[in-house]
Image 1 (cartoon, rainbow, N blue to C red):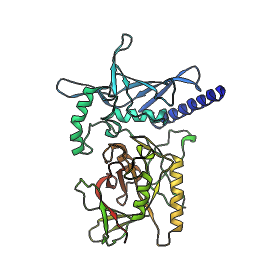
Image 2 (cartoon, rainbow, N blue to C red; image 1 turned 120 degrees about the horizontal axis):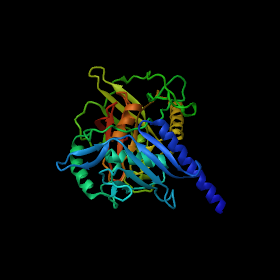
Image 3 (cartoon, one colour; image 1 turned 180 degrees about the vertical axis):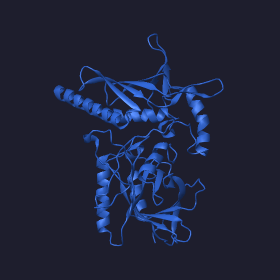
Image 4 (cartoon, one colour; image 1 turned 120 degrees about the vertical axis):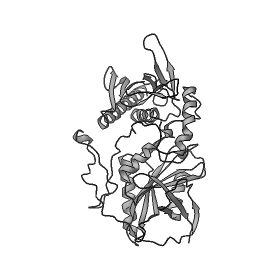
Length: 400
């Protein structure tokens, strides 16, 4: 039994090491990884160099003082991975989840106080810390029990109102996002959700999907009458009313069942998501585009936490395979992947974060593609359209 535990522990450490190496390969100018330990298969800690811009202090006038480089030291705590790793960041960022510490040997470093740890691997842990340091609101928990810096929390929450009223107008830091591997339809000659990924500097084993073009043969169909029977509407807060998204009873049922809409379940405590299948239509006179979601495919294999959602190769393959099955069994015409959906669980509001907008821009950038963000606990949802993820009106259709 002891041998099995040691073997399992070493396998996990090697898996973490591989993930950290892949993270470095994807963003070498942003994240640099060094491993400390007696041998690569059993590292004791990681040193991670971060080439990001964040706040180290607020001056007397309330102006943020910016630094462009940080170093993380990640030590695997006793009981890892069930318990969170110990993470120190130098110099200490001014941040709600950082507890500043000073010592004789090395002053001004901060301890990361994790608001909601889930065992998702070290690479995902690093990404979550980075997004939080960039003040992406999805990755900051203002109600966390373990707040590291109450002054930073008060300063942050005072700015949240401005951010909520002016989406996309948060601090002018670089929006950090690693290229999520694109996916390609299994049907011959058709490319779905094209994306540009720089893989020139990656070794061959890293080149899993390479897209050389970004053209699509799909065009919205002629105008469809929108004389639908409406069951409910989205929590619309914008002014972009021209484009609209309609969700059929079948798609609504699948999405709501997947995310346990209106209930508090174990699965919906973390982010969940999937893709939207249907058709888009264009009014030939006005040019207005309408999307109609006829079906939905859940990303059951995705890895999520309360603050992010990760869909890997296995998740995309399973969804694309299911999409192909829907296409082959559909007798009333062809469907397209016209968007995606994901949740913001618990107390989070429904909006497109910087990371969400990056996903939308890379994978669902056409004017006939949409995004839905839902909170199953608060029972609110919003719809967004196109490359810039502008909010549009969303409608739930009633049974005819």
